[in-house]
Length: 204
Image (cartoon, rainbow, N blue to C red; front, top):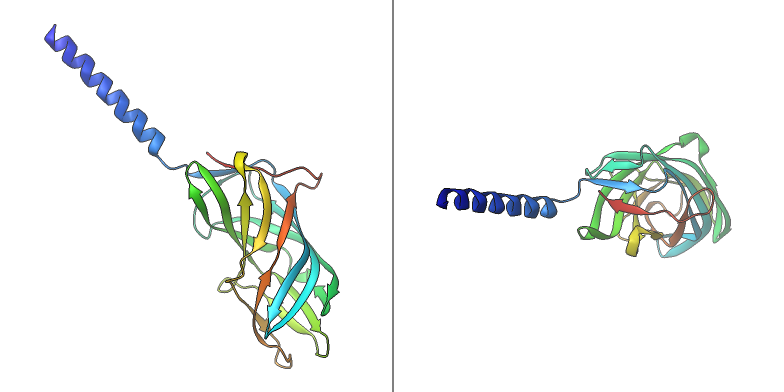
């Protein structure tokens, strides 16, 4: 009788330990409700040398899979299309020949299983911009200096917007450009599926 009780107690302890271990294990993957999404800024602002340049911008993104491993710098998708228009402070032209641009995973914030944002890099983002009173300058994000974006996530995993990380800089490449050096992006854009629906993200 005592041996039976001991075996039963040992089994109960093992079951509780397994349940606690499983519940405490961090989620390894991210799941998105849709593979395709459009990010629209009205506007996206580039700040450099004390001057501000604004354009409405739309990026068309596609993730490789609806389920992605949370691994730093992992390639998770591409920007396949991009437009910039209705500019103030100058004019801009997307360098379409440089598409597609890479999207890589950078991390997340929040307490598992609830997350508040996901951070990503856009590598290759390239456009010529002509500030008022200057010749054209080339802005290009690189692996060393990517365009860094932060996806804001509300309760239920709904993506409420994507903002440019103002602490990140990208190089401005032009020998004759009067505003050469580095620039930073500002602005929060909307994130929707091509059909106009919300995009949701969850940990699994």
